[in-house]
Image (cartoon, rainbow, N blue to C red; front, side, top):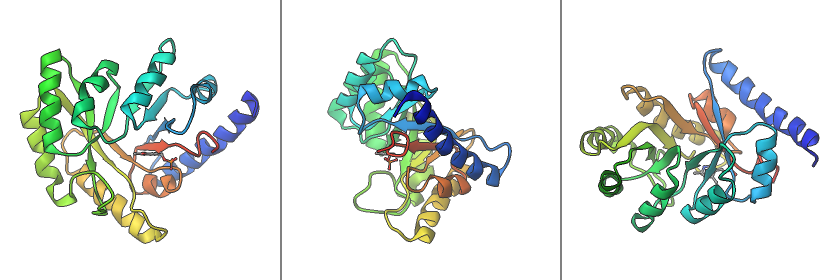
Length: 224
Ligand SMILES: *Cc1c(COP(=O)(O)O)cnc(C)c1O
């Protein structure tokens, strides 16, 4: 696709996000994170040229390589994948804008130690396993508020900004909706949280209707 064809294609994705957010309210603003994990640097540049600035990766190594290659571009990088403890230092070297997948108190404590040693802070979202799926990371909904508070208290170098969740893995829309509602209800109970990150290529409109204000779009943004 040429730049202008691609722009028309992306305009259509943006129009869908617009329609979904306007169903909630005129004041409900939704940010799109382009998930580039299946894409090459050239694809990221292509999307950058038509205006996208926030990108997400789910492997520390990939994030490192892409961020390095594209270091002259003012890209806002998000890390959206599971973080192993032995990769914390590598992630901190990149200093991403937002770590979206903080999924346990233990990881937070480990991260806090490393952040303190480097005299850094890191913005993060607590990941919720809203449909309680074994295949997924994240804290259980019933434990989320307690863990969120505990991280805020014990880990001052982690700046929690809200919640992230992946919709239930099923074709049943009502179950997916419930999983988003579960996360959004928790989000509403947090003081001063500003980000509720839910919704991917296959379910972002539903996520926005349930209150998401950040969608992580991979395949649809890169037309894959
Ligand atoms: C891959 C991924 C996405 C994007 O998935 P698509 O279905 O391609 O939009 C969003 N969030 C997370 C956590 C991911 O791993």
